[in-house]
Amino acid sequence: MDSFAALRPRRKTRVVNVGGVAIGGDNPIRVQTMTNTDTLDIEATVAQIRACVKAGAELVRLTTPTPKHAQALGPIREALLKEEIVVPLIADVHFLPAAAFEALKWADKVRLNPGNLFDGKIFRELTFDDASYAKEIERIEESLLPFIAAVKASGKALRIGCNHGSLSDRVLSRYGDTPLGIVESTMEYLRIFKKHDFHDIIVALKASNPLIMIEANRLLIATMDQEGMDYPIHLGVTEAGNGEEGRAKSTLGIGTLLMEGIGDTIRVSLTEDPVKEIPTCYGILQATHRRITRTEFISCPSCGRTLFDIEPVTNLIKERMGHLKGLHIAIMGCIVNGLGEMADADYGYVGGAHGQVSLYRKKTLVKRGVPEKEAVDELISLIKSDGKWVDVKV
Image 1 (cartoon, rainbow, N blue to C red):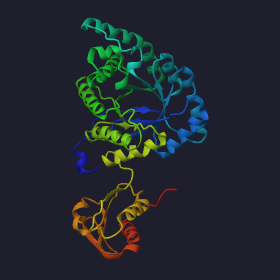
Image 2: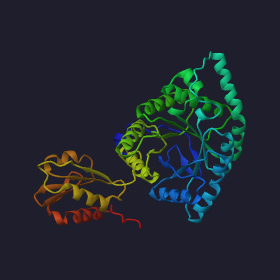
Image 3: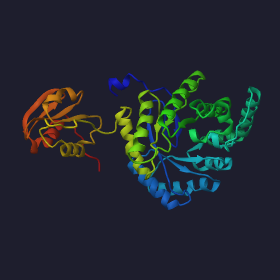
Image 4: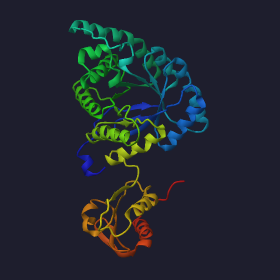
């Protein structure tokens, strides 16, 4: 991690083990996704998980609205193991406590949404004083006690995942449709689980508006810190949409919090094949320097001074050198801004004259006047001579 990212230290959290994948602490920020198949369609779900894992997903969540859907995780895992695919499976539970109990038998982690469990949302305006609201919390605690006993016995992890759009009438009436409402809906559950000594919890606060998501997570961290809680945080902008809009919203929400040191696992929620979420996740982690998994490229947008066709050259260099994890390579069209804009690049490919390229090691000129047709190979040779080249793994 470079000095710029080090100015924003990652928040210290406890480590929670999810099916052999450690989340929190000093572990890498994990990338996850969620299937959009019918969980009861075993073949289709396995195929989608296979593709997601191949793309780099480290955890996969599946919808389990009923006990029968939760049971389907058994044959799904069995089919994956036959293909030597080992990935934690997370059961996504709403509304039915019976589904949560069944999921403990089959999943590595169970997600509960406080707004959709033991509460309702039919847009009623309710009135509470402090005493009557405290009674409601007692009711929630009493309802949760059997599940707390079951999850402690199971050794499985839990995700308390609150969505802005699923705040209950009780919470909305008390706190309004606000970031505070999202936080308090979550904290009510966290306080109960902490009281009963269960701590294998990951917390997620999501909204479709990235500004609300950012503010809610900031407030959550401040509240947890005040109450001595260090649970790992899962980040995501829910229902972000698709295409450029979905990626922009996700990058804003997730990236902002990562730069502030918040976040231990992420998901980019797109209205697309879940496989397509994975590259954006890693792109956000790379851009924020929170997890480096490939080469970092710096390239100018080009202008009238550019001395070679920079777009295809940049694509070629990315194709041939993009696997060199941790290296910074700059592709600059001319010398005017070349050295300054290269910043801290390890290597520079800079237009020196028409049809000629200058190669740099950091800011030191190594070769001048390299014919453009030979320059990419010469850059690779330079990297190899420095012992920084690795072959692509097949």
